[in-house]
Image (cartoon, rainbow, N blue to C red; front, top):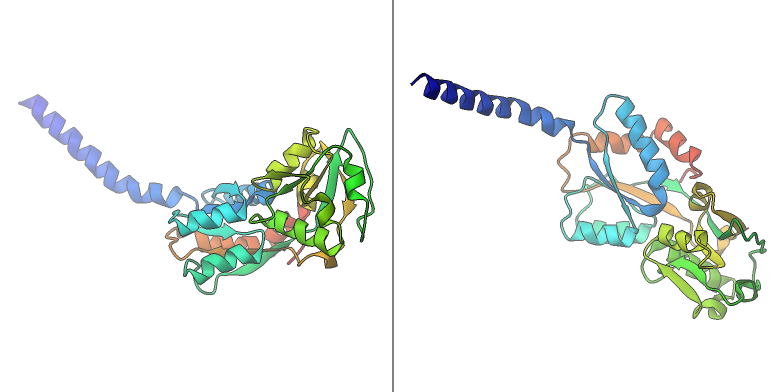
Length: 258
């Protein structure tokens, strides 16, 4: 009899503790942030700085903006989205998946031509540049120009400079800008097109040339809270990224102000 009383008391205590602790545990979960692959180092640093202020550290998931936008459209339970271009943010906003009034540009970037650090190469990026000759028998690495922002910017720039036809059939495509850079890091591609912040993050590549800003649309990173977000910290972290402190962190990793 005594054992039954003890077991019943233990069960009631477990239920009580579950009820008591569940809300606290829920509050400890940081917002889920879906961010463009090019933001890995900067967003991790921002998340660390936020956690240092005694907030729950945000959970970060990185991929091509196109892939992330499709996840959001499919019902991914995320809180914030940072896209590497405006088109994919436009896409989910038109679908009613962005919380009204929360969209803002959080960063800007530059487009660069890279080469393996162990095989240095310099090329003046200008109209009719000899990029095909510089490639030799190799290929040009870039993110998929049909969907991934870095690839779209790259194709637009090469087209504006009149050299796209010379490389269109000599591409090594990556699912995102970091996978494209990896091809150059490993020496599988002689040249690649990435953001300046990507090149800065890797010791295995060098900047072979800078694309003129006028050769492609301005590179802007829009940030927004998602309409389905229920995390109470999501809006506060969004504001932190846009604040002077957040902007200083992004600048430290090479991003420009939007």
